[in-house]
Amino acid sequence: MSAATDPRAIAAIVASALFMQNLDASVVATALPAMARDLGEDPVHLSVAITSYLVALCVFIPVSGWVADRFGARRVFMLAILVFSGASALVGLSQGLGSLVAARVLQGIGGAMMVPVGRLLLLRRVRQEELLTAMTWLTMPGLLGPVMGPPVGGLLTDLVSWRAVFWINVPVGLLGLLLVWRFIPEVEPQDPGPLDARGLTLWGLALALLMAGLETLGRGILPAFAPPALLGLGLGIGALAVRHSRRAARPAVDLALLRIPTFGMPTVSGTLFRAGAGALPFLLPLKLQLVFGLSAAQSGMVTFATALGAFAMKPVVRPVLRRFGFRMTLAVNGVLAAAGVAICAAFTPAWPIGAVFLVLAAGGLARSLHFTALNTLSFADVPPAKLSAATAMSGTVQQLGVALGVVLGSLVLEVTRMAAGRAEATAGDFSIAFLVAGLVVLGAVPGALRLPAEAGARVSGHRP
Image (cartoon, rainbow, N blue to C red; front, side, top):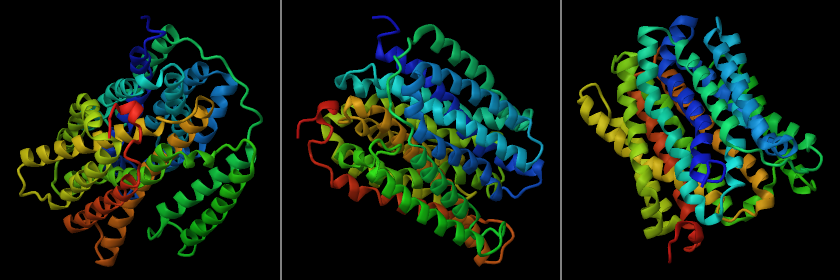
């Protein structure tokens, strides 16, 4: 079987994009305190460096499926890698918060086309029986990013500069571009119909306004009336976007997909899980550096445990899903994952670093199993004709969940420290933030319990 037809080879090559994106996401959190010192900003306020990228992803991912069908998925995928790599270099050259945010937005546009279109390249070439294997191969190389990100990002920050953590995306992107050009054939362009410009505009505006309102709420960055006004306007435009999507013949965001139980549950309840779990990569490096007093390199070596645990779980996913099925796995593991996030509230400088490492690795195991199960279940019953719309919606919701996690963590820190009248976040503020994030993860469990017992059985091999 050639690389052009072997789903494992295609998945591994497409995963170069996931590697880049995950590497970038993990190094930003580790380098955030150093970035704040260099740019003269508050570390908590500099969460905008993360959310601006994630908001750009959410705004532009919905159009990715249409663009891939119209111009060819391989061609769009290669262009997206170029944009992402070039924008990464610009982030490293930023001299102020404005130029940093602008470069991160451009990076987000590249990422919006890169990951969902790469996933689409894979999904169009695998049978349903191969889906779990393909998804495992897709995510395992991509997990090298967060495994390497914290220690590499910490070392580069301490030994060179925080700017170097973005420049490493350039050689990785060039390697991925070469592999795609050499081994992955083009998927023939299709007729996606006219572009739903109105729907894309409404959804993009709604998401951008909601995230801007949440990001600035209680920060004193804007006048007191502005954040609630942004949130209200975002909700109003969001209602118009929902109304449009229900009436349009070929909407950019196809809400009818939510009627498929195996797609609707990972989309709705999965957003809660991603929001709670997404707060962890933001909060943990800050706590280790601001409360424990660790350097960026030391912090990276500790937080690397979460990704190591995630990587170790991948070979176990198939046997677990075959034995217990998606419903039981997501319900029970959701409780374990919530506990893995909430227990971070108990970390104090008195804890041995080895104990912190082991606890984080165990939590990484649970979160990895959950993410893989959610991502696989999402496409278990999606008709081939709906794959482009499904990958676009799934990608948007996934990134929205992660963005909400960063906003959740930074907002709880800001509110608790302002309520206590402190200038800087303390260990108690971080503890409250971790507990809130754990409760949000736990909120995803009822959705899993509503799944049919046979949900995704053709993919998992489970027999209720």
